[in-house]
Length: 132
Image 1 (cartoon, rainbow, N blue to C red):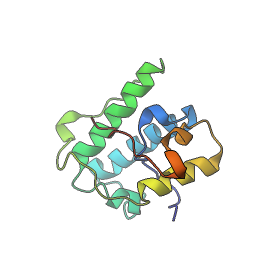
Image 2 (image 1 turned 45 degrees about the vertical axis):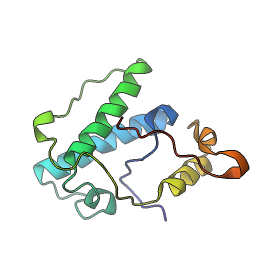
Image 3 (image 1 turned 180 degrees about the vertical axis):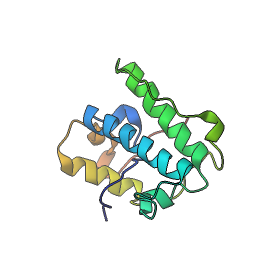
Image 4 (image 1 turned 30 degrees about the vertical axis):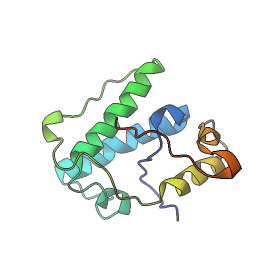
């Protein structure tokens, strides 16, 4: 079931359309602020809760988004403090399973390349981890 509000996708950034890439980057900064500065907004949201103790993983997701933004020649002027990137470097909890995230993006009708994530016979083929 799709959660409302805050969203950090588990889709490889190079598969995301401009709107979703930049939107996730903006939301990631909001989430980072909640987790590192004790902000109250969305503090109890399922997307926020899955990142508790995983600031390193969130930092790595940010860096993956920045690499893709740079590849597309988008300006990036909002680095995160690596010193705050503590905890687990792997995200293994999901608000929506990966396959559901692909379905959600497909339904949006945007320019995300999610059709490439569907293998033969309509089965989903998970792409290489974005944090690599």
